[in-house]
Length: 402
Image (tube, rainbow, N blue to C red):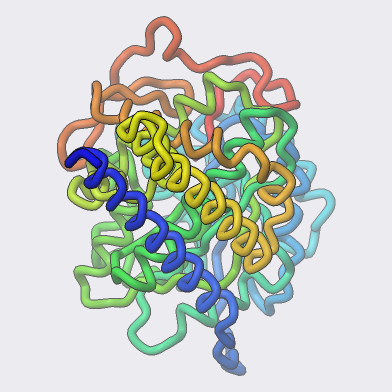
């Protein structure tokens, strides 16, 4: 065996250990017993920034109005009064007259439109606890109780939730579901629970208004691409814990196109690379299938190479299947046969993230600077996002998942 083959083979074994450790971390998280809820739960403002209409948007919004929680409001926000999401919010108001549902219209004041809108929503919110989640998320009735219960634990300053896919209506959407459920989710749990990194995800950011004000509010991250990560990192600097709640949100995928999927994952990758460059390079060690193929080539299709490939496929499929059981991820289980393709796509996105700085987000292009700040640019050619029909619902506003 050559020196190159030996190094690649060692990385393959390291990747197996990584996935075993990730599975153990996920199992421990989701099998942990939730802390007893206090008798007096604080009132909560749910903040939901919108742009365009997601697939199944009305039903997603309904899930946040059906919470088994004593006192909460839902505050939606759009940048323009003509946004098609306004009509959906008005319909929701008619369906839930007993729930305080408000709509804020606020023009963006920074490069990151979502962060700008969240700053306006936080100012309009009436309650001391704020829960932020992306517009395409769905939750069960116990969601708020789980999240706020975790926030009330000693020393906790922010609570975030992992998430899985739901409602994939195309091949790219199925591949995205696999990325969410059996690639990104275990990586996030491992980073949070084992490496003690300040992981914060747009699926849920739950924090006290007082802590948000201490870090400068959402206005402080209007110039960053990864606003959720930046808020989490700033709360951690306060000496407060970032807690990962054992509650898997559901992200409604709809009918995603391959180009949109590539642009979205490349944006996530470049945001992560800019925010945590050292850890991002180390992500190479998690690519079991691509590394096994490299081993096969470096051994000139030898027995060791074939054994490495077979072992990698077995590890990835076995761990992924176990992960879907732990999190109740039915969608990823359905698309599990395509996991090798998903792994190759993940590696391709990772490699592409090192070439160039351009990302496409919410119908606009940005250049990502070191540290994760963004400068508006212009999307050209194949990088321009598709408009017109997003998911399965027509809209007049280009929209890309947060």
